[in-house]
Amino acid sequence: MHRSAPRQIERVPRPYRAPKLHALGIGVARLRHQKGWSIDRLAEESGVGRRTIINLEGAIKTPRIDTLYVVALALDVRLAEFVDVL
Image 1 (cartoon, rainbow, N blue to C red):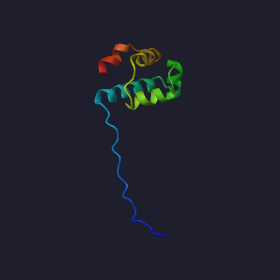
Image 2 (spheres, rainbow, N blue to C red):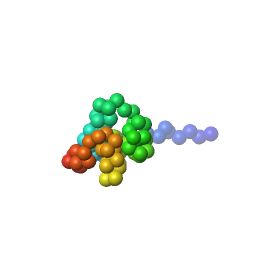
Image 3 (cartoon, rainbow, N blue to C red):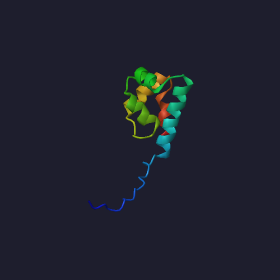
Image 4 (cartoon, helix red, strand yellow):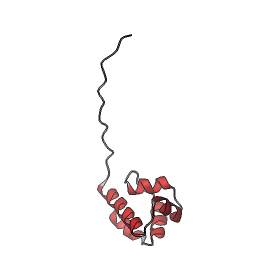
């Protein structure tokens, strides 16, 4: 059996996170922590999926406006506070 040389493992770059999207995620996480809520609790209170909250806080995907709206309602803040960041 012939063994080939070990392959080099390439480092995959982390996805680019837009600064404003990142700031929005940090803001949502901060508000969630101030309420003492877990990610699951915010997902339940806002009616969106757990993965949606993770994506929002981690600036993984650009959130839809209706998602921002229900998350803002759950956190008892005005949607404008989120939109101003963007």
